[in-house]
Length: 142
Image (cartoon, rainbow, N blue to C red):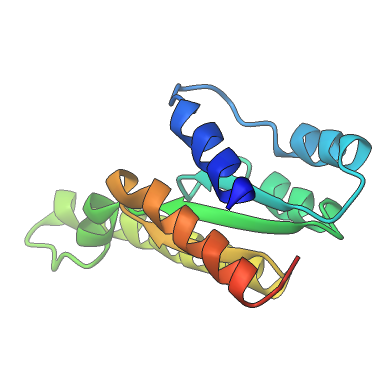
């Protein structure tokens, strides 16, 4: 219960901002600072410009357990599945399909690397992260 309270307090204090995420620095700092295996929660919106850095960082995080909370993008999904009626819509749909495919591939690769991946609406990300944490504790993954 004490761990859950600390995680909840930390998560409640987090604030969103538009800044570049340096996944490699995160992984390097984690390797220096954390002495015992830990759950590392990463919130992200895929696709990102530096998806390769995210994948490399997850590899670097071993032996820690990364939990990647991917914020859902219903507009991108809808655009990727749109049946285009004209050339402009066709272009948008093709770009959206490429982005959607890259997003799905990244999530599969994260799972293959051993990360837990949760997809969630931004409004539910905190709840989904806590549910994943509870599942980690239940399955004794740490």
